[in-house]
Length: 171
Image (cartoon, rainbow, N blue to C red; front, side):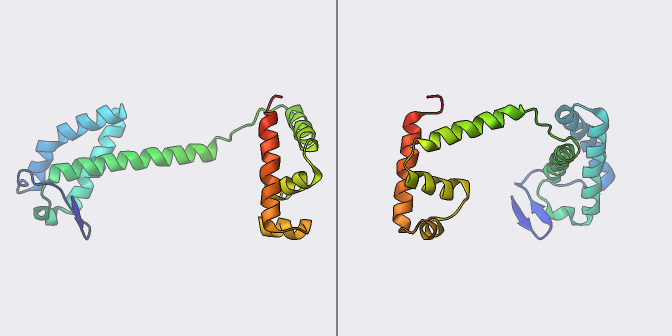
């Protein structure tokens, strides 16, 4: 398939019928059946088929440039279905708020666990991890704050993470 401007070229098939009415009569039932199978809904299938035929009709004066008008018709219809599905998903995400059902005490417990784990580290390892991971500083800035070299900050953070990994999440 090659795109040339707004004309799409498909692999060679049979030549196009001379007029749109004949093409519509030949292809409507097949397209509708395929779209009904894809959508599971007669109204959606009919509307998608209508939109696809309309887009093809708008380009009918250039139909001789299409190697496979039927393939183009089906592609337009299926693209229309995909666009509608994506739009519906986006609209649903905007309209249906995701409600968090977290227990407020879970956050307190998590903070206590993190605090207890950080106390197992040396003060310098703890400082490196807090600056890098909790506050999001880069190693250059964290080094300036701690008064050490950036490589030292990275080494301290690596050592601290190793201690925390050994301890594990449930130890």
